[in-house]
Length: 210
View 1 (cartoon, rainbow, N blue to C red):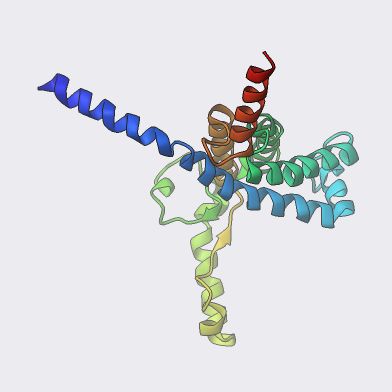
View 2 (cartoon, rainbow, N blue to C red):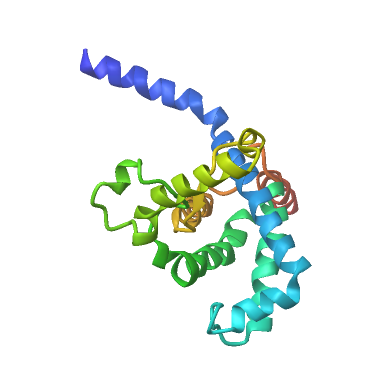
């Protein structure tokens, strides 16, 4: 009985192989616009980006800020487009993984885990992933809401969504890192990437040449 169930399970898994490219495709479609937008923002304000990379008082305090800013822009802009196409996917993920690690440790880590401050989250219950400003955010939101209700058009201001406080923790960067790491091992995906068709084209030509 158990053997038959396991055999049926294996046949089911085998049939899923035809759709194995779907997961990498979805990861690429989510990551590409985020990376392209980030790279374009840095490029559009290049002087400010270089200053932020190099300034140790209010920025990252990195050496060779012009070079590092240029590399980050290239990784995000060019890498984002190549991810969208599924071209050299595994290779492209490497500089992007490095970029995410720099973002995590140089920018977001001091602010804990949450990207948005939310004291109602289960993470707020004694976790070390939160910081003091997250824990204080509830009082600040209530104060802001009270002021806006008294002196502003509160319904209009909140018609696009509720008021939140940006915490800028590692949450998004860590998720992007995990997605990129998955693509490093999976590649661009079966049938849905340039890599897949390029491999078959080159392989067929090599076979014919032999």
